[in-house]
Length: 219
Image (tube, rainbow, N blue to C red):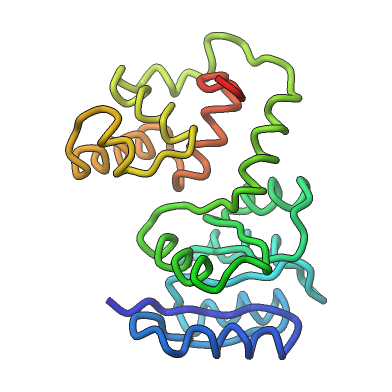
């Protein structure tokens, strides 16, 4: 399957570098480039990419607002945010805007390529540094009420168990091994969890698990 990729960065040399990096990959096809957020929104509508590599700090319209607009569109592409900054405000704003992944620009090339495939497959991706900051942020917040949101009541015991393991960073394969289930069964449960909770992807599921107290940092 060919994955259509849109590259968004305000620096032409950086965009060229990403394009050069992706060219040898048979399953990755760069369908366009954009130099700012407004161009990104327009290019996403025109080229219909599967995955967008999105810079955050850009002129006219930043990557966070561009992500929000693209995700609100009729055919929302999945967004992998790439930035030199790992500050908390960017992480949370990007996730709230609808990004499905977040990597720092100094990540190894093979990690970026693998990340595009992960995002295209419908999964989510957070750099280790970002995951650590995410957990630290929730650790610093007041303890949520024990009952949590009403939505969690819709989950079965098995679904809550799987959501807990998702929030601890386990992949479907790792969850399958932990619970002695088939990976396809875990995938079905994950889909049911996202559907019942009205969530976009695993990133939102992880955030919700911490926000509701289902998972506690260090627990």
